[in-house]
Image (cartoon, rainbow, N blue to C red):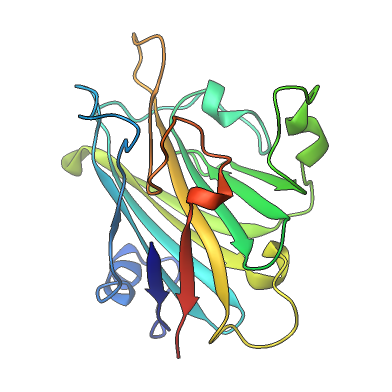
Length: 214
């Protein structure tokens, strides 16, 4: 799956209406459960849009959710065990290293960098991959009237491993994932924008390719 990532017009980062307008022409990428013949009954839809400005990727995710919650209190906790989580996987084409970035509904952030996909034999890949220095910015809005929440993220190209040079004409592999937790349900409903054949997100060969256009 190839996706054009187009330049965004100027907009106000703290104004939800301005943010949404900036992404109006961006192609929405839907979440799905490609490893299933039909989605789980509790699967909730959502979509992600991308764009770029200067030296950064911008991401806007709209997530339908009947029960928006998280027990996360600090950055870099294991959000997927604590409630709802939006995830970004980004890898410059030609690189083996990739980043995994999480956002919780209360705008707590988690940052990981992997030299290769973790395997079952790795003792604690999370601890080894954790990055303390802030790699990206985000804002979240919980919207009860729309039964969901929205994530806006600003990821610097340098943090992803993009080398010197402008973003236009470059390519990144990408995937966006989601853990949709509901109080009273034992396990969250997971989904991804990638066509994964099994419910596992660390499979870069199944991710899409983001083409930065001018």
